[in-house]
Image (cartoon, rainbow, N blue to C red; front, side, top):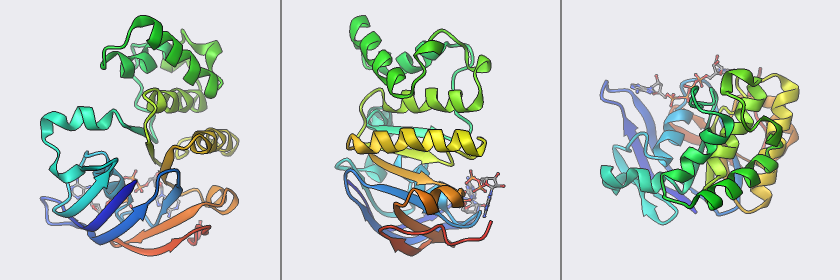
Length: 228
Ligand code: ADP
Ligand code: ADP
């Protein structure tokens, strides 16, 4: 479960990015975060995995108060949250296998367990054939599938995605959405910031619209609601 209680975020330069958001997202939900550029979507998302700290208010993720976690505990907290980015953020000198295994190796799993888990997630994203490829040998869609595999390899309760289809063509974007839907069907909460109107209006899910750092709309099976 994710809960924000009266959350504010002012950046050091004085920009008020989030202005008093309270919201609950239950385990297993799929929610889109929409809104114009500069509305506060990325800040909202970054606070959930402690990339940014709120200036005030509470953010509870998987039972932990994110704002209060000590810096030294942040890496441990993040193992239970998968994060997917618009620009994939794969390690260029590691193969597909190594990029995914890396996330597991840090928690001292046995080589057999690592291999089993990596193959399982590669199966889910249908990329077993590219296991020894390097990121620059893959298409954008394939790189995003690797990054999704990496995000779920520790079986997190929550996957957070910031514009995951932002760099992909429409057809590839639909394939990526199929994977997120499959992950969600298995019980993982998905929180996705997106500008993709067609996807939001077709794969109907909860829509949380943010404008000027506030939630202005929250609908169970919502629409994108913006032009373009
Ligand atoms: P980020 O949230 O990743 O910091 P932005 O939200 O500003 O970045 O924008 C992400 C991408 O989406 C950019 O390429 C931007 O040009 C594009 N974009 C921004 N606003 C819209 C919009 N209303 N509709 C479609 N695309 C948009
Ligand atoms: P969105 O993702 O909806 O485009 P952001 O959360 O990126 O919105 O930005 C919200 C506001 O906070 C914008 O005015 C943006 O310029 C500002 N902002 C974002 N990141 C920072 C930062 N690191 N320092 C200062 N201002 C920031």
